[in-house]
Length: 372
Image 1 (cartoon, rainbow, N blue to C red):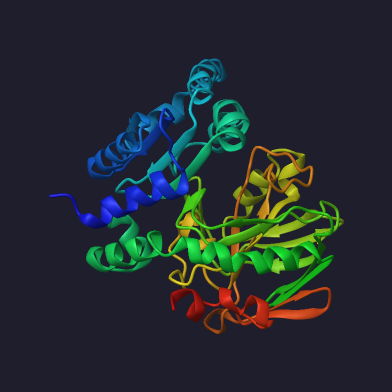
Image 2 (tube, rainbow, N blue to C red):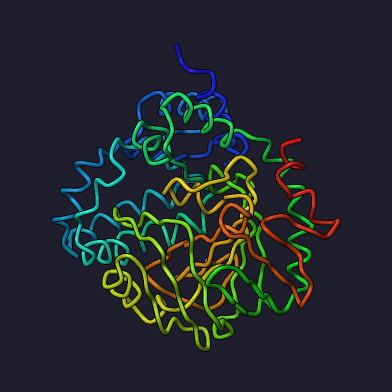
């Protein structure tokens, strides 16, 4: 018997996130996920009148492929899959697997090659700008272990997070979007952090379950050369199969001029991938009330209530600042009291302290309000 929570999740993905309509071709991409979610997604797409295409990938096989790919092969695969993606109205990517570190020994050069060939052709140029898409992690014992929870407790937590009332969150985000539209200077303070930048004239986008599950962020991009000061991230980041901790940046005229962390040599190698990798492509504020602590999974951690993330690398087309790069690395700072607190100012006004919004118009985004 199918877990009814899986059916509910599939319904959210197909009908809320991707809004599948009759005749829509839907690419369902399962990487390390079990068959139950694939079956549920196929059923929901058929019920909506859509045409599902399912691709299943095993992460151990993907590791071997990533280690051996050549530019010629990735170009060929990218062109073939790009032609398929161009025919799709929607994309649902489900990421699972028993071992979160399965790709940890793929050389950085191979990751970069994949990103600038296949990733660019299929995802950057077609999937992201031209389809209705949503990407999510699928619960596994490995994820529960990273989160420090039992498998059963983690599953309960996972489904609470992923099937929350995203429509309510969507409505509450409108006030934050409007506030950002009228903002020029952002100033963030916290342990190891005194960060200033401008968002004047930028676009501001709310994310409430239509591109990522779990969701819960409002993102924009800083004016590219406006970033000054320092930031110290207090959330571990699992990036390309390896965990980075205690990452800290110093900025001058928008550029990361000093980068330190637990894997400092690799960190700087990643930031030297291209010119844009040392500039920031995204600034986002996390508000998901059910996500309160890191679990080394970016799709969860970047939505932590009371957090923000700052992203070296490529900007999104929805909120462009002109920065181009093969990388897009969301790094998270939590500002709740348990993680050292912090303050966020818009044009000199304190709008969030220790993770809670202060203005009346923004208090609907605080955890108590969103859960109520």
